[in-house]
Length: 513
Image (cartoon, rainbow, N blue to C red; front, top):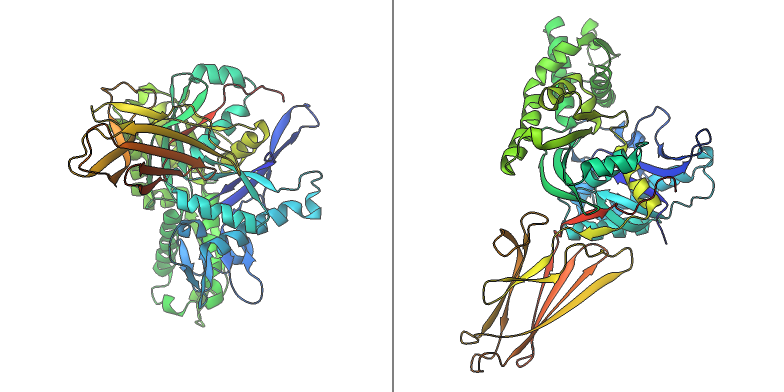
């Protein structure tokens, strides 16, 4: 079944999108499903009572900032996928698959709600975006969670590739954009609520490929919320030095967290904003109420080090790969944090006006990209060949670059036969690797190991007598399983590769379909 929608299952927020005809232009466009106030659905679940509470209602009960478990609330359960332990929440151990399933089920039911008025889309098959660093075990568990929620994952796609494709596909000159990007580099600068991720991408032979990725979990939007919360507290204490913050009302803590986040967002478009929380502290005096103003300059001063640290990540990434910012065709800025003026100004100083792309859909472009990928039925291709090191120190291709990777329910398999050159130590050694850089596959180019296998063989046999077999299969979770077999001793060894590198095949997309 082809996918009918895209889903950005994010660290702090999740967004569902699908493609529909625009009644005015006649062309197709991405439709994003948000809350009534225009915000994304928080990736939060609360376990209290018979049924879980999901999304904004759960987030409204949070009394602490950060990601993880807070009493009976889980924020960002995605981070627990692939972990052998469960999630201890509300006095009960929940499996990460079940917690994630609760969020995905909520998102699907929201899409199917009668008030949405969406006809003809059952929201049963999706392209789901994942972080570049998500390993195969976590992908497999995410698929299980989706199945529990009534969603089949047609395929996964990395978040930066989805963002870049979503941006390009929405352009009126889409084919020209692809032509301009051919063999050039684009930087996807994604500063969201949980992390800052920077990904260098390149279009090669019609395939959008990731060249390099780096991230930082210590400067996500949540850390800005913490600074805002401290700034608010400091200003209130300056007005009322006797205020006892240990007596903050239990019901007011969640309201304070939400007010700080609202203030952070408001200061992206206003010079100042007001906060008012009645009965914040359980005392009789005027300090019981929080009533103050925060200016944009005050907030920017208290988060300046976070902004600088994030912007310096660009220089760090470029230095690592031996590039200058002038080598970048354009920088696509995505994620909720890039609406902050100080971050925008810093990006302009680095890339200039013409090479910085600030988009109005920065917080939803990943889901829109996933929706376009679903609509266009685009497949993933192996970005680098899977190679095996031979006894003569040469690398032999097992699965070629450009191999189409499997959709849901499919797999690809390959077998290679060989002989043991030197069995004297009783071991056959297999090193599986890939080129460090896409497209650089000559024998002299640098390789990066995937994994290795050591297989017992008959040490008394003659060289080139014992036959060896290597079988490799890649499943729809993009996990490669390796099996090595010695035919004389009938010994078998297994290994898995969870971090295959893949790209998005965009060369044959036809506009207007």
